[in-house]
Image 1: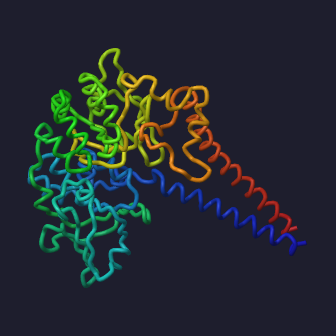
Image 2: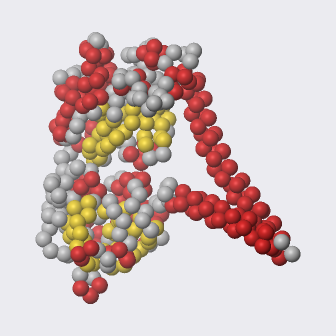
Image 3: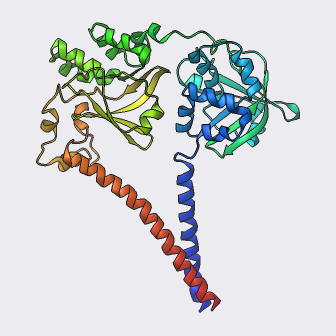
Length: 418
């Protein structure tokens, strides 16, 4: 009897282990770390922790996976603060201490060829000149590990200890001194002095920048920067594909369309990910709503109008209180494009219209970039609710399956004992 039951017991045990693994793996890759809480357990790093929050770097750290924080204690932070850097400049310096790769204490001493260059968040933001945002990590003799910014000769800061590690997700290491970089410490322009057009033109949004340059909307963008401004800049290909629709608008409607791509408040990517809902724009005024909905889909952030849906695909600049994101479509407000979506996706059959995008032979959907967005209205809301229910049911199903296997496994163990 025991021999007959053994294969079934083994199968149940294997299934149980698989379920436990999938559950723990999911927990380790979704919202599994918070740098503010990690450092709050270590009072000696309270100043460093405070300025990560002030500069909004904490939000960026929390949304990333596979990251290393080179933390400096309160005494080392004092030497950095004695330089009296502006908040925006201090953000550049601290972002140099955030490596976009994982280095635990063990990995530091196993660096191939003893030295490596690692990109930091200062490099990733595009604020660094050339390779100034890279950090040199060198495994020295005697077990010491040194760190230095790429634009600074010599290793002046060294590994002290590991503060906390979540393998291959986040590592927080203490280093002896702040990393010094002439480029990171260079004075940054005041928000109102930032050349919005130049920033967008250099990073794949030149077509939109050119429209804004000659528009009466530009002064509104400039006047809003100091108080906080978030800009959603469509890519050149998106604007070029939209040019025919844009030319058909009156001058006043063109201004409204451009203003629709600006939000009069600073919104970091982490803020957008945690604050789903309706967002007013620079075009919002009285009865003219000109709003859209921010909706997250995992790590993706979607901007949903009543006509189409755009996705954030990159960050051009993030310098509180000013941030510019690159999006893959021109946002189309319903106030300017009433009936467009109904023409693209007939109300009487919204679901088949959505399924039409994926053909049996894998053919691409229609070329019109704005026509491929999901249908809006009650059916769209229902679809969203169904998806959410499906997600909830998936979790519930996993828990029920887990309990079932536990009971099943316990019964077989009982039979074996008997």
